[in-house]
Image 1 (tube, one colour):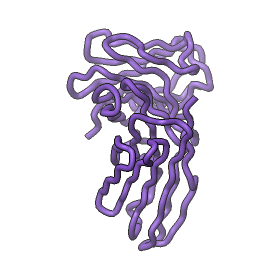
Image 2 (spheres, rainbow over the protein chains, first blue to last red):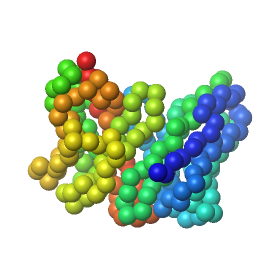
Image 3 (cartoon, rainbow over the protein chains, first blue to last red):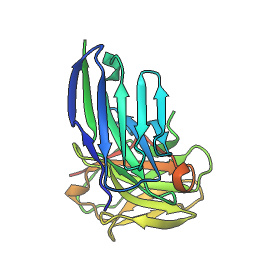
Image 4 (tube, rainbow over the protein chains, first blue to last red):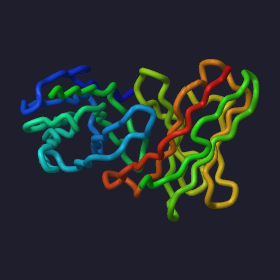
Length: 111
Length: 115
């Protein structure tokens, strides 16, 4: 059974601070996706990382895929109140397989 | 704009009743998935569907569940006899292709409430 552990589960910071969310597994994934989910809505894709060691930037968000394709991190620089939300990582199995989701990180950015 | 449209957005049903949740992709796709999320819990995989066949299913997807694509467009999830513990958000997703290039896009979900 593939498991993804996200940490921290909850994070509360002040606007302007930096933060990092981690996603770890003992399993290797073909790719890993980060989503953001608002209450009562479906996960919205932020980024997909495929290659070990890959780094992708989306404005103030930096995503990294571990060399062994077992872990990933999301770093937010100078957080804004609009970044508040639930962030999910999901590892995708081979052959268009299922996504295995982490428990999520609830981020609160205070003004 | 979501890649897939799910209907209804909210379904209320009595325990023991059958429900059908629908997913309509915006364009033609081959890879489909159903996930569920019980309130306060993680998103859980139910079933994957490729080329009009189930390709993988989880332990949750027991005999009470079934999926089909009856008209080549709508992708449905049927729960034959709902239980209280089936209450959850159900998400349909479509995938872009095999292997590492597979990116899954989710619909807005159907909230199922079993009374």
